[in-house]
Length: 249
View 1 (cartoon, rainbow, N blue to C red):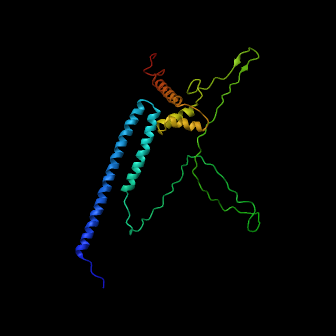
View 2 (cartoon, one colour):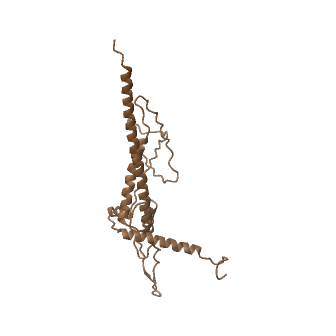
View 3 (spheres, rainbow, N blue to C red):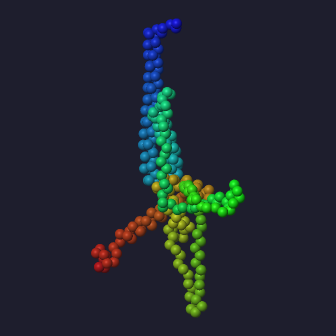
């Protein structure tokens, strides 16, 4: 017969184990509090840098903001991992719910690729078939942005009677005597102010396509777009003929 355990010794061991667990819990709480404080500090620094970014544009400032965002993201992921509930070893795994597959939006363009099964039956060699239907599988694909060159060709014609030269006018461009088209200017502005993509990164993306555009030039594109927008806004606010506020009424 095995000897009975000493109750006093067993209680002492349990108390020592409990003290060890409490020390580990206190250490984890202290680490979590420190991480939370660092996250709040980084958030405050990030907000301050973003306020400074609106005041002056600097490539060094953009790099600092990007690095701080990456550090903040890593800290938040680590904090989420520490605060996630831990499953006991003897606890059965939770049943995962299958994600609901929503239909793709109808406004997206569709491209159909028909996979022909062939014109000869692999079993008997027959060539007469009856159509039973078709299985349709929709795959969401993305077309990468591409750069292209648009050539505006304006032929000159000379009248054989009066020798007058005829030529179509040049289409309106966002920048007078500039190469950037309206699509490129809109992409630069949206990428910077809506997607938070700094100009030096946009310049590097264009460089991969063999297009060398300096960051200062991209900044001028954004300012030119803002000037055009302000002029259009003033034109919309201008009194129109026939209105009560028109001076010649």
